[in-house]
Length: 387
Image (cartoon, rainbow, N blue to C red; front, side):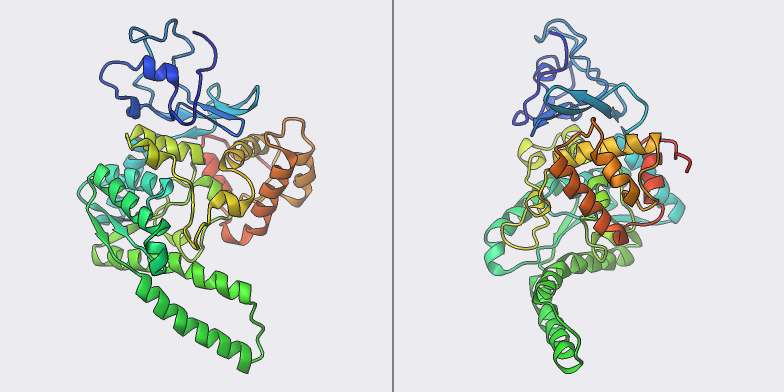
């Protein structure tokens, strides 16, 4: 068997890797080897399946000592693949991330790491890093904040999955229902917002008010995490990944102000890879991404494109930036570079999706910091280009 490993999203792992897993390495301990969806194929450097003849139990399988998952751009039939072949676009292992967080804790003389677990893949990945950095000193907060009806449905499933993640990682957890606090705060804030609008002549957009009411949830969660960080002389651990940061798809008054952001350089596929390596179950790894701000809300439904497309575009635009700068320090696509990128023959996603991705990136520039691009280039093994 030669060539690119056969992939199947529902299996979540390379079929050949499963057949040729080396002794002592469980199938779930393999990195994010192969995932296929929406025409996107991912494969990690270190996968030896393509080199081995025979996919049976006697095959050599996957090299268990690969310390990184390396991603470089590789255009494959049927879509974009992130594959080996370059020292750039390197996602560090969970162990390396944990070592970095441990060193930071020691330098800052902080004694705990406070994780907010939602049941989703990003919070699980951050918790994996935190638990590796400070076993016994990392703990999880489960912070439901919704209507009673939602807590009996979608959000109730979130709580169950968050509990499972904490228990699988051996992480102490506390569940604090913020729903009553949220409702009380909403009643107070909304009354004063309407007072300003009616008595002071300040326009109030009802759609913006509804958004503010829902967006108060992550703010209350971060406030709660901050309390526990202060009480235990710790640090709050954020869950923003590279794609959310690039798209500005996070709350700047919520998770965006966490003390630490251990996965902010990871694509969504790499985030899932951290969960796979840690051995979390497939149903947790494959969860549909949602901020849970209102019933039925999903990230991809709100954005209008898939994370697979956003992953592919992000990795590709970093490569293009290394050749000729196309983003400013906030990781925002430059006005003059927009059409240039869209006109390229190697654009990795359909043009309509690329336009939506660029538009989302550009209108959220205010959410990012002036050194975000330099930070992600450094963490993914790029030298910052001149210009």
